[in-house]
Image 1 (cartoon, rainbow, N blue to C red):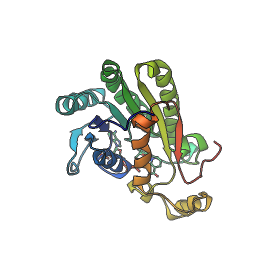
Image 2 (cartoon, rainbow, N blue to C red):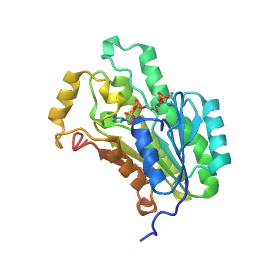
Image 3 (cartoon, rainbow, N blue to C red):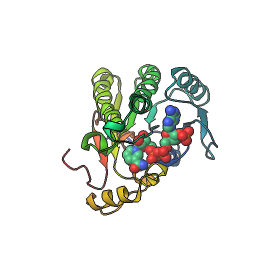
Length: 240
Ligand code: NDP
């Protein structure tokens, strides 16, 4: 058995100013890690190092990493969490609706992982956790852009595992179901009711229930798990 996770590590959570990302940041903070978050606007939550970054802009991502490295050292745990939706049915979905979501959710993850990998290779250890969605493999009407971006994260994690697995680096996907955040609060009540009816657990989840799983998959205990897709969805996506 490996020892318990040595702390403090330099942890970076993209989009960690609110929602699931903030809960993840707090979980690592409770573990004693040095936690930084990226944000675009608003306030930095108490106790966390906030660095401005837009994941659609490689220069902005680079500047954010440089700041985190200066204050906390090379990023050892990266959580690619920043994400967005722009839902509409296929026939109404513009090219821009598609590319904007993919550029944020999928290319954004690529940008931060690429930047983080340099330090992890030098350290000869690292944990990459990509926040996908049950929708990535289950599919969802009105979310062709979002589902494509979230399914793509699985390809990133598995290819990264094959490229860098021998360097002490793991890459895993956490696929939440319906979590109570601003993103889901924006869905019409009918859509929310529809989801509730098909979730075996019979309820939605809180961001903290995702955060605990992310913290564990980044721990020393989970060091031999890589390229996995871990559902946190109350059974919604079973079998996909
Ligand atoms: P929220 O909408 O509450 O938060 C989204 C976060 O992503 C914010 O911090 C936002 O920053 C950030 N973000 C969005 N676009 C960019 C960008 N271009 N550059 C940098 N940061 C950006 O979402 P959730 O907390 O609900 O979702 C977090 C992740 O979990 C997302 O990837 C989402 O797809 C995924 N997920 C959520 C589920 C849910 O049920 N809520 C289910 C499955 C997956 P800002 O505050 O500046 O806008």
